[in-house]
Image: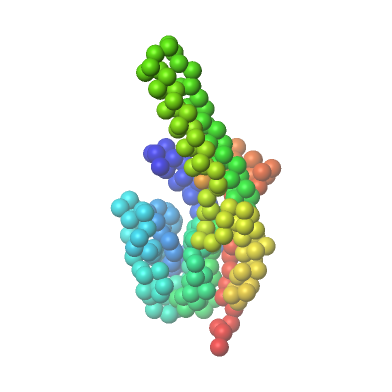
Length: 258
């Protein structure tokens, strides 16, 4: 990911964090799951919250961290019972195969009255991300198509055109199927598994009370279509028509199960 793409991603995350912070009490002790580079944890700490961030050791962001992130085994949180006021994650739950274990650990480390804030991709994001996948294919095809017509008739130019044809065939195969984003299913089934209705049912099934499930009013895709050329105010307006890319779930554990 290029520097400008990372900058744009940080602006998106800042926008999402503003929505998250509205649900945090001053001085709250926050556990972030899936901290990555620690960018969001750092921003929360700057906002006056006491933040601890954890992630599995195999994360791709390990060498690009900007805030301390504790590595753990992906199973048990390395903290005592009733340590935190809030458990927070951003685009993490859809990547976890054993969510039951994660919910049990979240319940264990939360203080009485504690709750969870989970930012999740929406089914709308899944739809437009799939569209953006093929838009990117067309863009890459377009770049190769300029090489198809020889500038002059020579073996070198014909060979260049042939390489462009082979590259376009390769791209067609590479982009034929939209890759899934989460831990299970495929790009089609994720239209359901990323939906608000499905996640509300999921939390209820794991005995969490869903306090809020609010769209974070911003439109974007993982391909960062238009990037910085499409400013956040315009993306906010687009979200009203095309749908929000993420949903914030505020959930609270119910009574402990026997």
